[in-house]
Image (tube, rainbow, N blue to C red):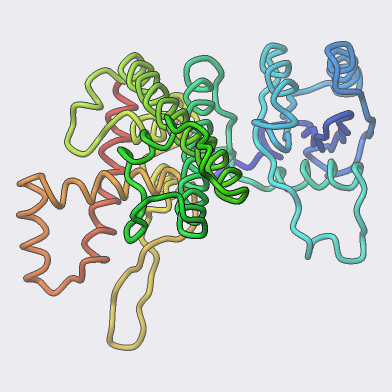
Length: 348
C-alpha cells in the first residue's frame, strides 16, 4: 500500500466558498504547514493561486479540494488543465474540531492532512466534464421536476377536496382529469372562494402538465447521451435511460474507481457482516451513493419480475433459505460487478 504522503512531496488542501478559496500547503514528509493563503474565486484569482502553489513547492504535488462538483468545480478544472493531480477532500467531522475551533485556514489544513495517510488507490477522483457532466445536470433536473410535479399534484388533490369545484373527489385526480382542469375557464356562477380555487387549480394543473412534458424531454436526452457513452447498455434487461444515466454519472471515467469492489462500495451494494453467535449472514449496505444504489435496486426488481434467468436464481436461493432482502443484496452485488466490468472494457 502506498499512501499519499509517500508519493507526493506536498498536499494542498483547499477550503472552497462562493467568494474565496483558502489554500493550505502541507509537507508530505513532515506534515508541517508550509503556507496558507486565500484567493478570490475569479479566473485571475485562480491563476494567482496556482502560481503561488508552484512558487512555494518544489516537488510532486496533490490538490485536495472540498466540493469539486460545487464551489470547487471551476478550481478543479483549472488545476487539471495545469496538470496538478486533484482529488476530492471530505470536510472534517465536528468531533475533529473539538478544542481547535473552525476557520477557513483550519479547514484547508484539515483537508490536506486527511489525505496524507490515505492509500493512493482509495483517493476520490473528481468526475469528468462534458457529456457526463450533462448527465448529472439532467438527472438533477429530473429529480427536481418530479418533486415539484408531486407537490403540485398533492396540492391539487387537497384543493379540490377542500373547495367544491364540481369534481368527484373520492379518488385522486388522474392525468386525464388534470388535462381537463388545465383547460378550465372562469365561471360567472362561482362564489368568491370557488373563483379563487378554480384559478389555483388551473395553475396547478398546468404546472403538472408542463413538468410531465419536461420529464419526458429529459428522458429523451438521457437516452441519447446514454447510448452515445455506453452503446447497447440500455438494451440489457432492466436498464433504461434513467438508470444508465445514474450509473454512467457515478462511474464517470476509466481510472476514477480502482476496481469492481470499490464500485460496489460506492453503490452501497457491498455486503456487510451481520453475524452473531451461531448465525453467519450479511446485510444490505446503507452507505455510499444512494442514487446509484437506487438505480441498481430498480434494475434488480425489474429483473426479478421479468427476467427468466433471474427468476430461476431467486427460486433456487429461496429454496436454500435466503430471504428476499438477502437475495436482492446478492443480485445487486453481482450487478455492480457486471456493470463495472462492462464499463471498464468499454473505456479501457
